Length: 191
Image (tube, one colour):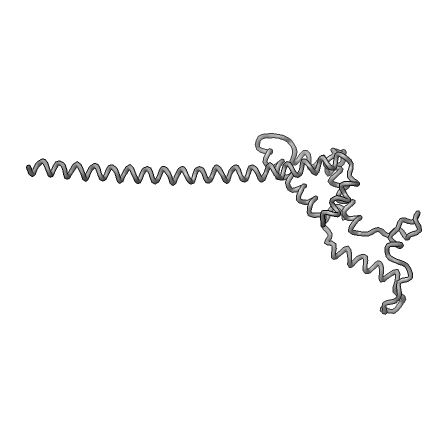
């Protein structure tokens, strides 16, 4: 669950199978719930069965993976990602920005709503909040870079159009001068 993407519908189906295992008898008929699901989902210390909510478990495992990456904890996969993508050279700077964007998008895709985001921010350590800010800044840097390239491209197009118009005006003016010169020569020869 921490490595692969599992849809929330699949989590609901798995929880449905767990509920049906707990509450149904040998037949396939539905029966009455004797205990509330929230009570069953409580930890064993608090009187529940310790069955976790799969969506929250999935989210916490994914946040744990991202936290390991952002805090630089020495794990094999963290070292592999750093060696492969994060050696800072001029050619790799774009890859660094794209990797930051990818991590930020993966993390934001796991969060379903703003309420969950606020609840998670309350549980995050300070370094994780800094990691989110860095992801946001990298994303805004990429957007600003794209806007900058669009502006440069528009300026180049305007320059080409302007130079083309000036060139056509110069050609037109040259043709007018040539035509005027021919008329003057013809006018002076007739006199």
